[in-house]
Every structure is written in C-alpha cells, then in structure tokens.
Image: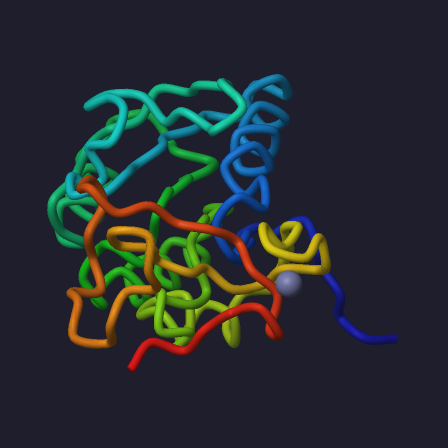
Length: 197
Ligand SMILES: [Zn+2]
C-alpha cells in the first residue's frame, strides 16, 4: 500500500479570476469569510495602487467589506507573514495583478509551507492581453474559479473588460494600470468587445 499521509499535506493556491463586474470580489470575500468562520488565522493583503475605496478595507461593488493590509511590494507580503508570531493559516491577496511579479514565487512558497492562498485578480487587461501574475497563477493554482459577467451591450456572456474614455474605447497606448480617473469600464462579450488600436 502506498505511504499516504494527507494530514501533513496542507497548503495550496486558490485563484478567483475573470473580467470586471463578474463578482470576483464578492466571491473572494465569501471565501475568506468561510475560513474566518472556521477560526482559521487569516491575513488579507491588497496592493497600495488600488485606492478606489479605502486604504484598509476591500469593498466589493455590491458593498461587502473585509479588512486588509495595504502593501507596496511582494517582499512586504513575505516579510509580514514571516514576522507574524502566531501561525498564519490563510493568506488572501486582492487585485494580485497590480503587485510586482515576485508575488507568484512568494505565494507558491506560502503554499509549499502549508498556507492556503486565496488570490483574486483580473485575467485580462483592457487590451485583452493576459495580466501579469494571474497568467502564472492560472497555471500553478490547484483551484481556479473563473467568473464571467453579462455583456453591457448585448446581454451575452462577458469575459472581457472594455475601458471607455470620453465615451469611446480606449486606445492601446493608454497605460495598463489606471484605477481612478475619468474613464470607466464595461464588461463585454467577445463580439461586442472592441480591440484597442
Ligand atoms: Zn455583447
């Protein structure tokens, strides 16, 4: 008989991804609350670039909130977890595409050491190109929940995010990361999505 010992094998990565307006943050908060309810020791991070709503809370479009530590680098995430005295069971990270690419190794190291990682992030930027970190985590995560939205134009199944500037689709020269500004975003299906030029 094989020498199975699952009791020693905790630690994995869960990824929640998809386009905007798909309910990713709702799902992220739901998942984190499940672990908190079961009395896991949970720490949540979010990149400091995402200042849309609050410096210390993650807020879904539907209004749910959880507390989070704002960080400016993957090294900071690694340091905080290493320097926390009590054992951390679950690490959550929101908007994982907005932190440096070192986060992929940091999260894998956590999972290797027995921590459950719950990452949330956009899979595609407004040009429909793969977003950093999420592209890697899609391959490496044990569990992937890919959520879709409803197309703002036709009501079909939307898995892309269209950035609109002054009423028109943004051009490809616009910066990838632009969280707060005069632009806005729409969930769109592949047929209604207009590739930036
Ligand atoms: Zn459509």
